[in-house]
Image 1: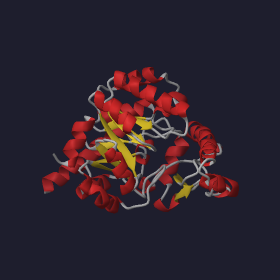
Image 2: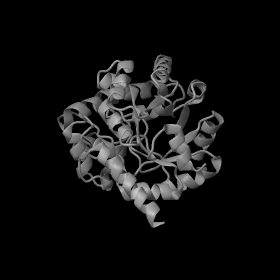
Image 3: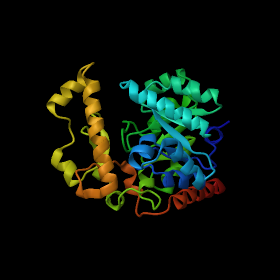
Image 4: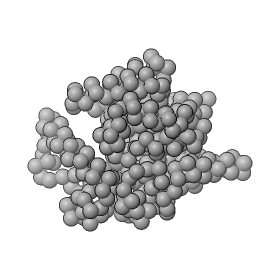
Length: 330
């Protein structure tokens, strides 16, 4: 089975396209719209509950009322907070009870999620930025890898899509290209490399179904590739954001004390928690209220391919048509 066929079997999607989980932008209508069009939308649980005000189970049922197509779930499995990890595992149990069978894990050991999901007949893909993490994820039993390259939004990797693929193609798992794709030609090119699917985030923020503030969408449409910078001030590690006047004013590097704490084996968890709590509030404000607030607009270099706000379903269908045209030409 080739990588695309494996991905489509695992995810239930008919088009090899993922709307990646995004805090704070993954509202139920966006997730549902991508799945309904044939891709697969991924639920980001903090967005579903904290930002968009849903009880978790009821939020999943709200999405189900909009589409009966498969949806996925994003599980951050970083273990610095037992309270958070316990809550995440409860959410996974609920998601399984509600029929979700495709999971994407990140920032930790996915083994516990793999065991739960496999027992229910589901599949787990894991975010990786380089081969050493991919090997650990494979050892944990994951079914595929989300290969986050240097053009991605959020916590980007450092390698090109081609280099990342070349470093992992021998692992025997379907690989998903994550980062830098904002137009149909880039989607087709990524699949031509050998990726089984493409994950996009930034492109789906600038859609009519996404409830992000109009200022955020406008910032994405107006931004050029060179406007994307890496800031350490959101989570303590570099995150791709749009260079706004606020970002220029506060800078992109963590302060001296924070840098010292981030290098300390025990203190780094405290400073990351501080950054995370602060950024959760800032990103939520920017998403809901726009550029009048101190904010960070997360986005990847795919902004260069985003020229207007349009329907998520139209994007999926246009990308699928481009793939069909390429297949017909060959």
